[in-house]
Amino acid sequence: MKKLVFLFSFIFLGGQLFSQNFDNYFINKTLRIDYAHIGNFNSDNIEVRAFHAGGVWSGTRAFLIDPTRYGDIIFEVFDSTTNQIIYSRSYSSLFNEYRTTERGRVEVGSFEESVTMPFPKNTIRYIFTAYDRNNIGVVVGTGYFNPATTPYADFVKEYQTVNLHIGGKPENCMDILLIPDGYSQADEKLMMSDLKKFASYIKNCHPYKDRLKDVNIRGLKSFSAESGITDPNSNFYANTLLNCSYNVLDIDRYLMCLNVWKMNAVADDAPYDVIIILTNSKKYGGGGIYNFYATVNNGSNVADYVIVHEMGHLIGGLGDEYYTSYTSVVDYYPAGIEPVEPNLTTLVDFDSKWKDMLPSGTPVPTPATEENKEKLGVYEGGGYVAEGVYRPWMNCTMKECVYDHFCPVCMRVLNRALDYYSNKKSSSSDKK
Image (cartoon, rainbow, N blue to C red; front, side, top):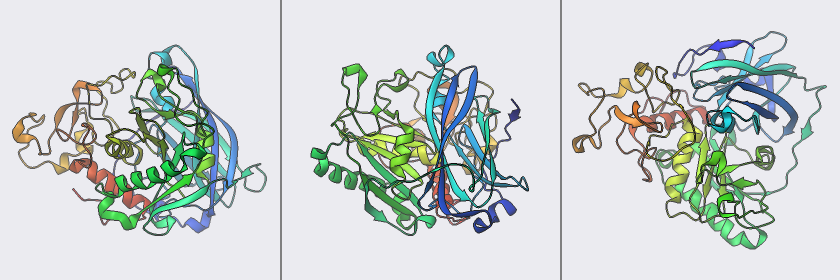
């Protein structure tokens, strides 16, 4: 397999790729590719299982080529005749977390994953490139899709869409979709109350609060056969729509979806850019993976914090800034390698991070003193380790259990994500 060395860049790309005319290559419809991600620490392979199409394309039309590479996978699409790149998407996956665990070093795992793109007018060639924690890329899957001859299944609408906040047209907004899991028919009143409550948590948190015209929030009335969420450590198992479960990757609080293909099939019922699964459970838990999906439980007394923290991962590719909680990943940020996460640095390439935002004279590293509590700096500790990885703020929402307290660096990243989805090339891109 061809190895690729990643060239680090976090700026919006200029030129032809961003001014590419959507109508030259695509129609207003979505193509979804379901595939299995198989391997472990030493192997990585993608096997495409099915194509699905329908609905409308609610994603960006101005930035067909992804301007960032915060994820550990890049999906690239080429016109098969001219070999010109016409679409790309960077995202992360549960598989790449799995392969950094002790289990992933000895066992082969298989994970469901999906990627969406605008429906092509002509035959395309696609490439999946996966990056390890050393930022070395390997091509792990390739293929072709011919809209005239390749078999695909049409989207089937099953669930009612509930509008929770509408700021504009889908193609001009970040479309957030809340999908309930673990709510039976008897829980309908609770489901509707929770959808409204969690939508309010998003709307009242900056930067979303300042940019409600750039955000749509919808929910689905998606019922499960049984109430509750599977919790293996408590010997509780529930038959739910998306098969969400605690103790994923052997972390008790890590609450994730085990049926990603089903999740995406359910999400087909509404325009979406971002999927958040709202789970019916009192036990604290959640998770968020960049451009993949996020989860949150409904019964936690800090649920407002959890949903916006996990959205930081999901939308901005932000890394965890804490370093005292248990995780099962090993050597997640290798020495001598600059993390891709925009709010973490090993100082190997700090110029690519928030160096441009530091006030003149700020010491690097910055002492974590009471005087610096609300000052931008370079504080040691982050990314699950106490030494060698640095964060920009002492107590950001990506570190502490505090609602609506994103630091200036995280705010800039989240504003740029909103710019991307709302097709804005500047406006808030450089907010600090």
